Image (cartoon, rainbow, N blue to C red):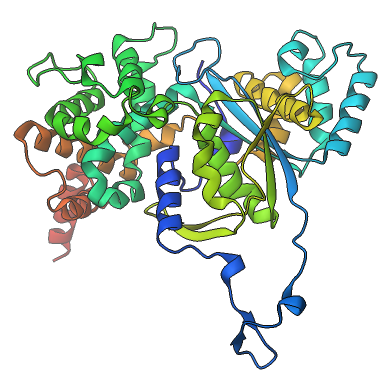
Length: 452
């Protein structure tokens, strides 16, 4: 199903296409001097830094804001599921008492007999969109949602784990000009044609990024003499992977599933979304956070990566190649996990996440019209949905990225340095993309001669 999501695409901003950027930036920030609010000196009346009187300085910290998180469309690292193409994650800013009252009111109003609110069961009711909208409106301004097209994310992961290991020394350049978003959107368009079965190459991509063993993707890392692909972009991606296969294998070896819990969940989107919701979301709205998540195997396996935010304010400027953004968070405690049966806030998050996923699969359908606008108003800017303008080669940016991709493939074929003078190559391609087409150049030259 092709999605049309102009409301959200109009909010397009430079953002990472995958969590590794966020996680690596976070680790760099933690290791190299982020601002820690609890270590800042106290300033006296004369403006000089002073240790101060501890009794005078001591102020009770504000109570942490309870942020409850749940997902919809979870399939773990399996991104090729036809029945659940969208992953959605919701984070709700409600106290336990507020959520309990809201759940009780919704259950009473709509005569819901089930002991808890679950989008999976509520979808069976004809008035599901009405229930979802009613609940969502009660938490307006107190929810952030994020969504990802799973198959698009597979294209993003392909860039992350095939291109990034080779281009890491100058990755800022490629992110600045959206090569990662060009590749992920182009591969999504090529590999997942409407009404066609998922091609073998897509299954191999998924297999490799679960195991990081080249043997699981024989076509991906086959000899360069393999048959030429009908798609120019896909042909370039495969040539790049084959030409720099040894580097890719070496740089991703530590992620192999048998040696790394991190590697086991590289394709899962839960941690990706939670990073964005905390560091680029709730961390900016509240001084301290108490994050409660619905039970989740990947989050439990990755919970340790959030520990650097516990008990201190993590605040740092990070760059994605095109601009700076502040990451900020202070966790009062490590991530907590619980069940929706015990926590009404998780029930609210479950319904909101389910509604978000459904809206994206029913764009333009009347029952979801008002919910569509609510979701648009509460969508995090790091959403990952197809954007045709990023691969429209009638536009200068995508045209330059296609030229760069072809150049990288050529260098891979020859065993050349992929980064040598690549800045100059980009500059030359942008000059060429901005100049008039050949026929128009000739006409302009002729007119100029006539004027003389």
